Length: 359
Ligand SMILES: Cc1ncc(COP(=O)(O)O)c(C=O)c1O
Image (cartoon, rainbow, N blue to C red):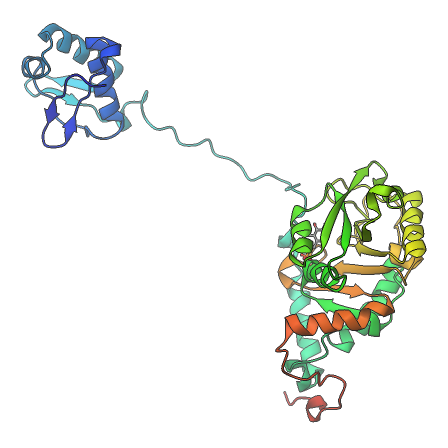
């Protein structure tokens, strides 16, 4: 509550808090006005006499307050020009200290962020040029919802070699990132409940829920996801499980052989689906390569790989290797997210545009 006000010029009002005592209240009000910029540098303050009159204070009180603020550097007294507001920027005690310079960290160890500065731009340009030079013009048209067969064929070969995935091009579907693959799979499972690692990426759980599927948390320990729990009563509703066997996200643990076995046994015995998120399966840090889980049970694993870590997330390039029974439902779902639904799928018909382009 204010008891007294003094107007400096048009705008400035000093509010004196009675609880502070008269002199301290005036000092505080002046300090705040100066700090907030309401009293700008070099503003001339009223004489002690006129301010004392205006605020109904003893002149000695105003004078003592001015002296205190001069000592603190808020005011300065100049012979002949009275008391003026000091320029705080010139006063080392009040100058705003620049934030200490932060040098960029040498390594960015935040999980989920690849070092995109290593993107192989030159090699990518060369490869794109080489591919487009011989690509038929059909590559620029709507195509097979699974993606170009050339890419699927190359992937089938690569995944077999590098990840032990059993893949044929017909069962591979190219997607725009792991996220699209997960959304499609959750969608075709049609309202099913998916067991998902906890901890895990909460965004991925949101993607699943957005596709109108349910989520049940699957704990993780030092052996990876507790797939041994899938056959217990807490998980009877789960029709699928999403796991990161190569490196659990975010703990980094590799799924223990017993847990791999438990997952495939659960899937086989109850016709469950394992969604294998192999987001950084190509990377080895401290151990022998561990092949993809898909190689152990290709009929029960929907394998998903991505270029987000090996190349860069901006490519939005990922691939699924599907059990045969899921290929048609996923193609159907993808057709409705990738391209106008009213256009028929012309990908399987021979096309005039399948000739080589003129370059
Ligand atoms: C656990 C996990 N899975 C998959 C991905 C890749 O996702 P996307 O291909 O959609 O970029 C990431 C990327 O950070 C991830 O952390």
